[in-house]
Image 1 (cartoon, rainbow, N blue to C red):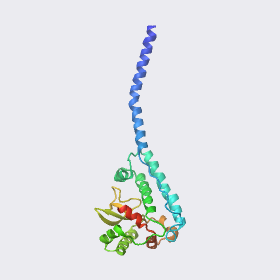
Image 2: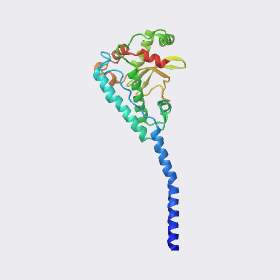
Image 3: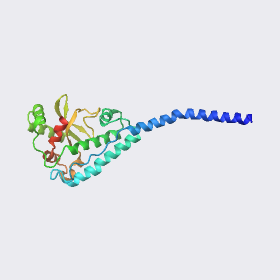
Image 4: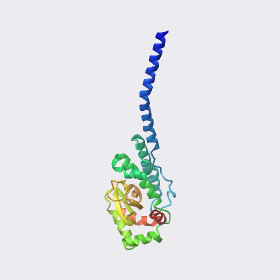
Length: 237
């Protein structure tokens, strides 16, 4: 009887020891999983208009492919990478402020996800009228006139070598024009051009090639007809 009791006590002690040793590992595993699940995910904004709504400036087929294929793929890829690489940032601002610490997959697809969400909202059917109010005053103050602003913005978009974006941002209380390569944006800590985005133009070939082929300048000229200046004014604040 004593032997049986002794064996029981030894087994109980071993079980307790194993449980105690395993607990920190289990808690660590839970913490790791919880951190990953707490991280934000990118989402694709609903397109604010139909695929054909921006014609003739942007054709319906380009819009459909751009939104359902290119943009959707960026969303899918960045969210998969966030989960796989256990990214724990809580929002887009923190994500882009730490781009230098991220993988190329996260940087490129995160930028593509955010940039396109911004781009869809920068346009509207029957847009393009000259801006008014505070944003018009800011443009005139920074660039001399609306026409001069358009010239400088078009220049930034036209001369961006290869794929990228042209941007109007506010930085230090003043509007600035610049461009970024690939899917980078002015919110990224790795970007040479920084600021709070107000307006953006996608100059990747997939944004215009079906209709304009290699005529990027023509695409830019026609894009002014669909700019959503009301949305730009909201972003300026």
